[in-house]
Image (cartoon, rainbow, N blue to C red; front, side, top):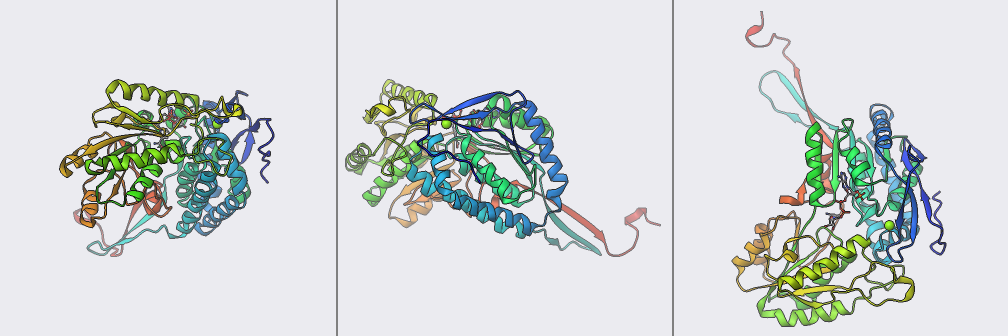
Length: 502
Ligand code: NAP
Ligand code: MG
């Protein structure tokens, strides 16, 4: 089974590419280092895929798709997915440790969120494998018309670093359930989780080439995958900026594309809300996973009537967040994923000040013990006195940084909440049932949370409106991304067709 080194050893782990069922070096022999964001030390040394490796992986995926995988029954596909879910559960502790070491997220989160939800997604889609059906259509005349729902083919999948293993699960599970084969590129910052998953995929018995995992850089490996004429579909999660590049590239070959991109979610607190719950929801909305969440509640719209009360409580709670060693069970926030992300966040603190917002809490790196002095830590940060036109209210910061905007008028609030290029999610805190549903209906976003935030389930669709992307992951909606419909006509009359007949 998986050859994971204990956390205490400082020797970097080594990972190869997973192509055609085997672990292999890159054709170029190149490798890159993935740091542990808590210390800055190298956590893993990873083979670096390039165009040549992508070509190999796509060819292997094609052979598997046309060959062995196409002859495997839906039931057996489901069983393999279910076995994979079980293997994830059996290896949960070491997978959680891998995620935390590579990404920096608190061990509590990887243990109770990332790993169980990854298993849940494989388990959920295992059940779908045998339930993907066509339909019969009542057409006129002596004709029989039915549809087949077939896999799309070879799918390229490019994922980000914020939930490394979970994003792999969101992408792989529906694709495999529907009978596709996959070439998946993890983010350069966090390749380890997907490579550990590759070992379990091998163990679960998937035929060679059904899943290929090729870590490497976006501009090389990612671009080679997205532009490859041998893929039938590309699925991408990441920044809106790169999403646009992917959509353009995919357009060249008319490759099918689905995109899950950025967000700038309004998290709206009405005066009648339960304040404890709302403050909790604001915390969960922006400090979970160090704020590196596409659906993060990064714009808190606050009813002016409760401004002082809410902000006081929010600040006290934010200042009480335990930031530090992500391996400690009690840690609530670990480091940001990379030095680059940390610098980006610091840059936005400067931008907030220059725009006239107030840095109400945080806004700097915390003091930590010596061993974490090179880590990419940042304090939970609240900007107040923000207006929705400011850059800090419009641009995705992707850190534990939220902007508080007060409102007095419901109509104006709705206009501002929707005044963003994004439309991924929104939170609403109120005890007024009609208002909650009115907002749920009028906010232009793919996911709405009422008196809760960051709720996910493998059965429930997730995805964006506007520039937050297109396509829905999870639930039965995800199957639409990975299947295509074929309509079959059969003549039952035995008579010649129309006016050209004898
Ligand atoms: P990103 O560049 O969009 O990266 C996402 C994935 O796309 C990674 O696997 C990346 O590879 C790959 N990629 C990058 N350029 C590519 C290209 N030209 N062609 C094909 N693939 C490409 O995101 P990032 O640079 O890691 O983060 C920047 C910002 O994106 C964040 O600050 C945040 O605002 C946003 N973001 C959003 C999400 C989300 O879930 N919506 C997730 C992560 C980041 P590499 O890892 O090698 O770059
Ligand atoms: Mg790393």
